[in-house]
Image 1: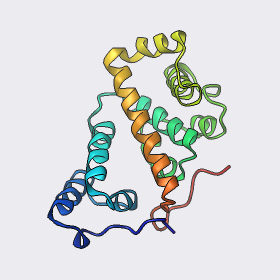
Image 2: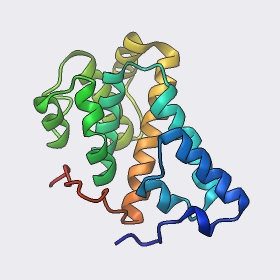
Image 3: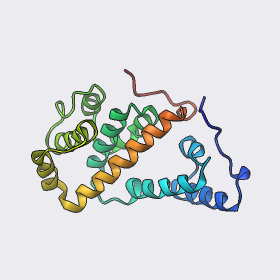
Image 4: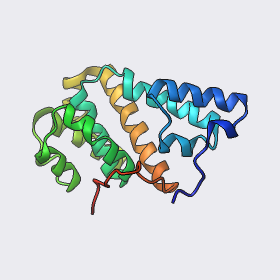
Length: 182
């Protein structure tokens, strides 16, 4: 059970309802993750704005974004983020072998080319809190300077979301099996 109640639109003041409506419109509904975060509508709105960019607007190729999202979720132990992003990762072309490499902490081994470079970048950032020149230049060669910034935004958003949902103990959507096992 989540540590905070799931907010409802009816329980909010007009400003909170406006945030709810913006999240609902941009995402086709308010899922449990944002229902929990909407206990603080201004914070949830700001976080959703960043997430909207990371999820819908970044021009990063879908596969690069999927590798980054799954790697960030795995590094955070983020069951919710890992699980709900599986379909998008598969739609972006990641197969069982690539997903397993990330899941089993083998990545960037088990990945190749751009996937390995991106996963290595995310792992260095999240584990070592810095990125080697070689790793940075490899990823810069793939996505350029603007892409590096987009990648950092994607990683920051999904890693932060994973930690927030873990801290709040937000359950997966009803009927969804946890895809992140240890």
